[in-house]
Image (cartoon, rainbow, N blue to C red; front, side, top):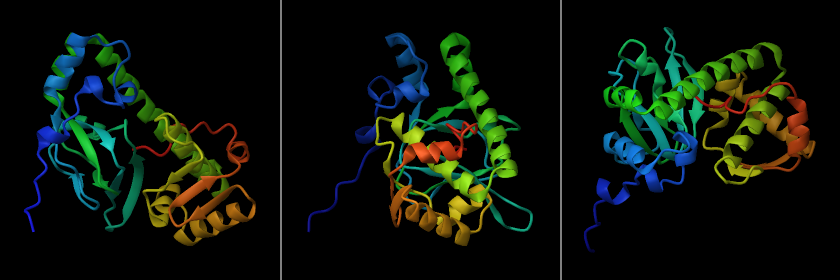
Length: 250
């Protein structure tokens, strides 16, 4: 049997200028020189395998990461050793902002499926932001969205019923997938029912019961992790006033 060819980083490298996700994670209107300057500081890493950590709590905070493919889960561990899911990062979204605080990541980021990321070292990014005002504005916009998402999540957990929490989660995923030119109504859930429940503050039995209930109400059909939102408008109506366009991110 011939030896399997090893995948080299150069073979999977995708520059910012021809990345299909550039419109999601980069400022609009960057010229060629600005794009090349940004691309020169980005490090392309080997793909992460399911269950492999991108970083762990306590690791030196050296880079901000843009997800190119796959899905990452961000979580922290309590003093009692319990896991608390903080969010899920999809392609075109950034993770690792918590490393900016005191030089160390305070959360953990783990791949839920095979994933590839672009690493943007903080020191190079800081220098580049000084030279490229549009990039600095984009980073500030991302930080602002993170703060807004955290506030909305607190409102969701404090004021919403279990049904509304799951509906908001599904609507959020729908919006995020649609922004990537993917189907807004048919997608696979990369996260487990247990992760969903942990994130939404619900028991796994409650999450399973709600999926069954939503299916009975013809709001969706579900087959393991494959979901079809058959009545997206009714789901949106359940969470009216709870604008969580990024509620499932880290």
